[in-house]
Amino acid sequence: MKQLLYNLSFRNGLIIGGISALFTIIFFFINPVIQYTNFVVPILSLVIVIALLVILAIDIRKRIGGFWSFGQAFLSLFIMSVCLVVIGLVLNFIIMKLNPTLPQRINDALADTMSQRLEKFGMDQTQIDDSTKMYTDGEFIAKLEPSIFNELVGLGSGIAFYTVISLIIAACVKKTPPLFATEAGNETIE
Image (cartoon, rainbow, N blue to C red):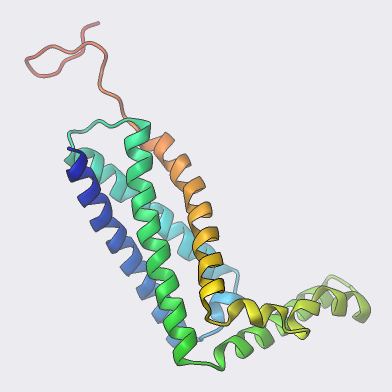
């Protein structure tokens, strides 16, 4: 059963990673910076990914007999999450390598968006300049550049984030078998 759990988790992780990658590619062709400047896009993507994690976790639970412990549920979700994060990082690395001007374009778009939002909140130019300093001093561009260090940081933060999500989902989808069950039909004894 353990091997089946691993196989299903890995397969479903590739499915979720593929769907997430498809969204990334679609949004990239619509507007390469929309995922960074429009807060609705990443939230929508996250909601879809979490829904897929729940649906596919329940599917795995059914396929392995209908019951699993919190540990099994977490392990399965963790495997799916690692697949998702790795696929996303590889795709992001490829996109940034193939389009070397993209980090600068994202940086400029974020600086403009942030400045406009802060201006609407009534901040003066000095406060806006202080708040957007990371975009003007190159700090943010350095985080976007495709490098081994940036990918490792992305891997670590992605796995940490999805570990928390996996813990929460595992607590929701775990299902222990009834304590007392009859052999004929698994009916619980009251």
